[in-house]
Length: 443
Image 1 (spheres, helix red, strand yellow):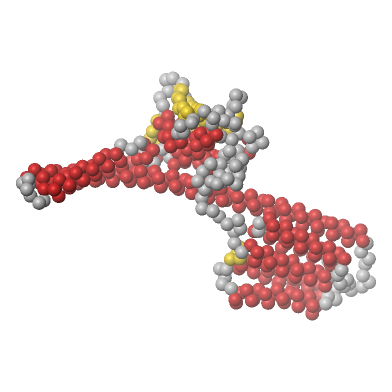
Image 2 (cartoon, rainbow, N blue to C red; image 1 turned 90 degrees about the vertical axis):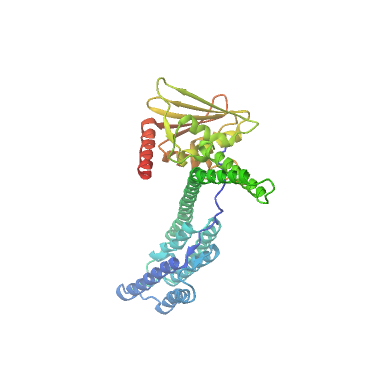
């Protein structure tokens, strides 16, 4: 049970979420407006004689490119990763040209070179972010070596090389740090979002299974009466028809098939609770836990269920919720997979708490992962088929929705140990409230 990951994966997602072209175009329009306004203010109000023709030419190129995208692409167009990287790479180049014409690193607006890299880090995967960061560092280096002198209204001040080197160092360090930090935070947010989506998918699947079981039981109940009528009529026809009647064989066949349908419906109504019960049916906690682990019995591993209680406390009745069922499913399944010979599931209750402990005799949780259990995409079997590192995350997320607290540790004698605890009063109160809601809906 040392790998918190076993489950059927959701449909594969692309490694990159396609970005809206309209959003990038809007960002560029803001940049174009800001650049044009800055050029006008610096030239006309602050009296710095800027080379307006080439600088406005560079700004006009960005505006023209935006207009091209507006007229030749649908507003809902979404860019692939390579296209988005080239889009932001152009923004870096355009800003570099503007800075080259207006003093290079001596221009206070040189800090804006960080903007396209930061945007890239929030939406792109690691390789294009690294490529754009290297491109930005190359532009910063070129601006430190070659640029048109910053125009001044009076005698230009002397910028010591140490100051230029300090600005270059600050921009390079900021580019590397901000891009890497922003990318790591954005990547973690995307991973968590995908893991939550997988949790919701697992819960929806469990709810559908419960609903189908309930519908099957209801259908069996409703179809019982008409099938009984058909059987009675078929029996009467078979008894009244003469032995040489050509319809006797048909009546006998009709009788046998109606009996077969009745047997099938009887089997449906006698399915175990985990197959046919309503998701709102109340079960003893021991029966609920055994139902959750029933599908994971393995000939090579003994799966032992045991109950202990603080007398004279009666066994709590618990709603068979999809959250509890799927969470216990994942934990018991992992234990069976990594056990050598035995998995024990112990259910305990008293007046205050209800506890389920799952322990195996396998290698246990890796020590370096023990403090991080419950994080998504955490697995010692990453890359193997069907192992996404989401098993423990989904189990913990679903069980915590039911009010449980989970503790993970390793046994002294070896093996993994998971403790799931509920406040008994809260667990039974939720069960009673849901039962009352079901009765009200049925009434």
